[in-house]
Each structure stands twice: as C-alpha cells, then as structure tokens.
Figure: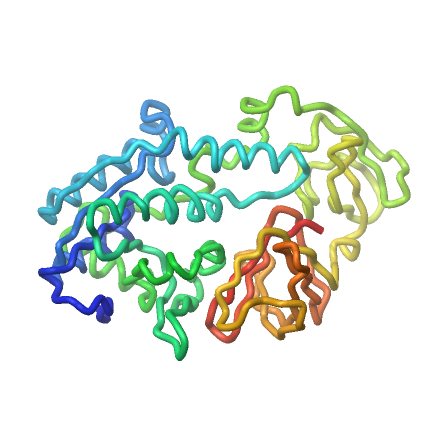
Length: 365
C-alpha cells in the first residue's frame, strides 16, 4: 500500500477507519493494521436497528454492524458503534423526501458523505486524537503542485469520485483512501489473504433506507400529505393521462406512464405546484445549459465568473463530456455542454480536469 503521507511512524499514528461492515472498509482496516498503524474502527448506526436487521444488501444495517465488529475482533482493533440516527434522519432522509416531493431526483449517498460521514464522523475522529480518517472509497488522494488533490479511482468501473464531489479541501487534507489504486478483485483478494469473513460479501445495493428501491413507498410514509394525484400532460399542456402522485415518476422515465399509442414518451419534468407530470419525446430531455446550486470547488484557483474548460458528469454512470463552467456569484454555477445531454434536477454535476476532481454542484434547471 502507498504511504499515507502522515509524516510520522505508523506505530505513532492513530487512524480511524469508517467500517460499514462491507469488504472495502474491512480491507482498509486490515491493510492499515498490517502496516503497523494504531487503528480504531467506527461503525455508524444510521437507522432503526430492529428494522435494519432484516435488510440485505444495505449499508450500516444490523447485519453490517455485526460484520464490522467481527472483522475488528479478528484484526484485534478497538471498535465503536456511533448512533447517528437522528442526524441521518434530519440531514439525509428528510431532505431526500422533501426534494423528491419537489420533483427532483436526489442522491442521498452524496448528502450522507457531505454531512454524517465527512462532517460529523470526521469531527468525532479528531476528538479521538486521530491523525486521519480512512474509508474504503475508490478514489485517490494525490499530492499536487499546490495542494492535496482528489483524483478518480484507477478502476473506472469502481470509481466513486462522483459521490464525493462535495468533499471540502479541509476534509481532503484529513482523509485517506487506501483502495483508490485498486480494482475490486484485488480488494477481495486481499480480504481472502487476511481471512476476513466478509471477503465474498456482495456489494451494497440501492439506497440504504429504501427497501427494494421503492422510493414512492418511503415518501408516502414520510410525507403522506404530499402524495396527491394529478394530470399527465404533453409539452403543449394537453392532458394525456392521470397519475397518483409525482413521487411515482422521475425525469427520463419511460415505463409505467400507462399512455397508449404513438411514439415513445418520456418524463420531461415534474411540476410540484400544479402536480403535473410533463411528458414528451426523448429529444426534449437533452440540454446544452445546466444551472447549479451549492457548488463545492476545490480547484487551484477560486471559481469565478471567468469561463473554465472542464469535463463533467451529470450522472454517476455517464461518460465524461466536455463543458465550460463559470460561477454565478451566489454559490452557484452555469455549465455549457459542448454536446446536448439529459439532466435531472436534484442530480449532481461533477467537474473534472483529466482525472482530477475539481468539485461540483446540484442541478436545479
């Protein structure tokens, strides 16, 4: 494993590892322990322990807490469980529900990294007199010419930089990502080498607090007053169908519209105030300009109204596409895409220069 660049000998260096109970964070802890660091494992309990026990393929569920504790015992490192349920509900779950009711498509994993993990957990890590917080994310931390930089993971299929665009420079300086240069198969190989019980554990699927990916059921439970029926209309405002609540739809959706005949139609936008689902041809999803809010920028120079050439991702699975970005003076930014792309309010637009992560923001329009 590469040096963690902490400037001290491993035996004199305390590192907290965020242990989710999965193979990635377990291998991170095993590598650091093997290198002689003073390792402490911390697992976050983020939602009801009783309900979580039966959840498979989730993160920070009951079974995952047990797995993290077992790995920590096998590695002979201290392990603590922090109850962040209230913070997680307020900062992640409630925000997810509110944004979904607005017709947006939120990414709660980014919000969780931004708040509970890299804000609250990092603060707790410093209270333990630790020198760094390490995670199992597939992203690289690189010493640049001017400061520490974030770069995409070497394995493009596992790269998680899109979900970490909101990491601040202060956090970058304190965080460590030992797996950024590895592939998933290499990680599992190391897990087998250390005889970790989670070596063959499947990756987590879906959003941790959304069983089976059914967003609508979660929203109805959290915000029952916000689920109201309305009209499905075309781009000219003509009524072409009815729906039982905009929470059942996302921008770009084609299936489940129950509109018969004619050319394929897609959800173009969701109107909260009128409770309308607007549909149209696929071409209507494509845009050249994207407006962003709450931009986090960790490039060498501050983001200004001067146009900067970058490459962007508008979805985690989307290839990088050339663009120009400039700040709007209100914490936001405007992005001009060289090729028209689909985009959805609530998703993230992440900026890159080569493999380097420059930051990103939340799509509003």
